[in-house]
Image (cartoon, rainbow, N blue to C red; front, side, top):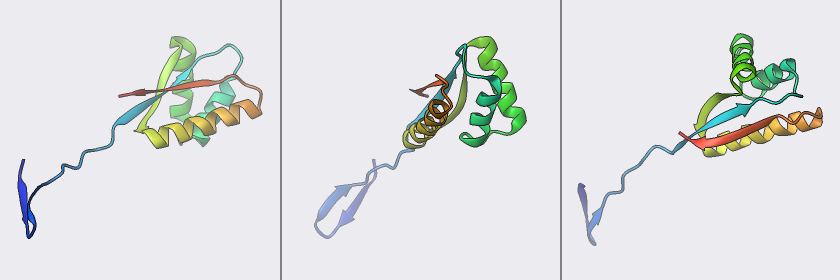
Length: 100
């Protein structure tokens, strides 16, 4: 690792690393409507109507889908917003956050 000379002696340079990324996964349930899932994906996760519809169908058919990959703070914030939106409408929509 390269070092940097300073007036007080030698100190190590620290490496700047990219923050760890996390996958946001949406899970299927039997109660949340398909239209509402598309609405959440477009308004909270900023997907296009076409992307949101394709993702909703994948969740419906396969049980889950990756919504996006974000730094942890952004992933957690979007999941909180989406879950709050679902609870206000009475839906049990679920998400999970896992390391990439």
